[in-house]
Image 1: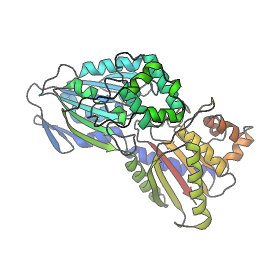
Image 2: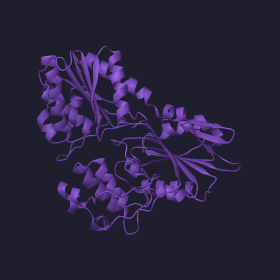
Image 3: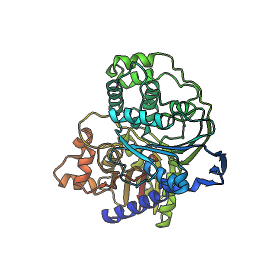
Image 4: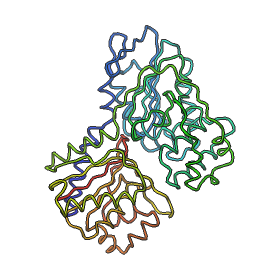
Length: 435
């Protein structure tokens, strides 16, 4: 299978998946307003005369989700507010929403301004009113209100240290929740006594509601173990500001949330995997989902993924080719160098080295939001020819991998997939096509 055909087939699979996961479509499918009643996924929520409907969308998929709400509800939206990543706001023209772009993955002053604006948007409501919260991944960095004694510099320094150390989203958001007054149900409390309904596009494996965007509008539930031990295990405890370490050392106490009346998961990693399997079958592959909760170091996962693919290619078992092996998840990268890339380009570059000279196998690692780290791409598509192409471009693939400069290596080989922001965010997709 040559590189051109490999790329075309991966792009067809990925494109079909993204089409099915369009946030505006997902939201519009579950919303209806008729005769004074808002119906959400079949559940009625009466809005008495004079009651206000406030819609707040937060995350990388916020613009698409808001567009879906606008298509379904139109002028019945009394107040609309969207917060998305800087550069993601031009996806849709919205008539009933105020648009705010903020910083991701490291928060800055725009994140605090967005937090203040969102809290103002839900303040002063009555028990007759309803707040529809549209949540997607990325919301943790985009919207913030810090607890007393914590500064923006503290939060940014802690976030950068954890990201560079390869902290997963569970640990990162556990820390963020401890430092915030808008996360861990804070937005829902600010909206009380108004009712809150959540529509969620999940970017966290297993769909734990308190972790997705750090759970601004859901009950926080019992607090998990103090994150201090996990941070020490990563070796970055002393890199955190003293005020952050002090806050993490205190017992967590989140007040319960009592005004959330419904939460609906619209899409997640499992749905991403199922759609990819269906798309691959449409191209004539025998498609199998190997897993939908893959985690771990990106370059180590690449070795595993390639071992599976090469075994199928060489032994025609446990499946007879042509086969498409599908996986979804969220890998991590321990940053040791200063290059450009992300978890998907790093996985793809490591896979290219594993596949060097192997015929008939294609591996792709792709971010569903089209925004993989600092790569400027969704990820990479590699074959047994990719490592040679990098070498012919005068680059040392192994050195670039060691420097976390995976985007540079893949770009030299024409192996990057650049989509721009896709408008959705449901973890990452891993494909192995075996001819």
